[in-house]
Length: 217
Image 1 (cartoon, rainbow, N blue to C red):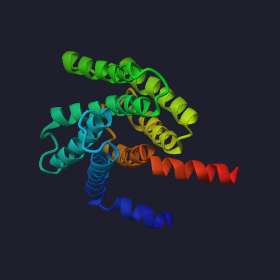
Image 2: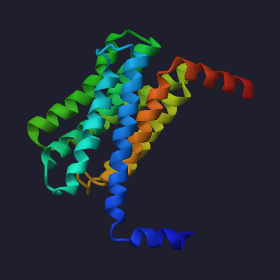
Image 3: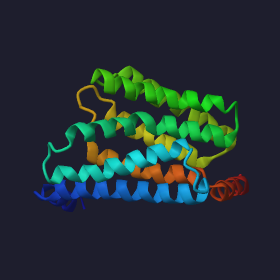
């Protein structure tokens, strides 16, 4: 089995196919999540933080295909979208989940999102990635989401947050790589995050999961 995998990886076309697949899954996963979240969960209401990250992820996936035309084409925009995706995914998700769970004052939701916005604005104005601000946005919101998941018994919030945190630590947090690298593998992480985060807002899915957990215990 390992020999077959190595043979596939050694194919000169494998990197391009792998990259195309990752961008396709990111785009489709984000588009599906955006559609069902917008038309179903929030009933065509535009004023929701979660819509922001789904739209950024779609743009990131679509624009990623430009590297097959020219690897340097749209690089500044691709780099910006990638950083926005990394810095805003959990802040937007945490802000929206805070409002949904009604654990505390709704004004606190804005604080969650602000951490990500500070990191992005600093990146745009200073043209450099502040690792400390990125970590603050990611880990502070990650901890908040994990607490919300436990308090509301929302298994999919726990899964979505864990997927993103693991992907961030493995693929995006190293000091010796730029924000764009390694893009392909992180696309799969974000596609999984999109779908699991969508499920975490569905009351029917949440209730079914809670019933299953209570029966098993």
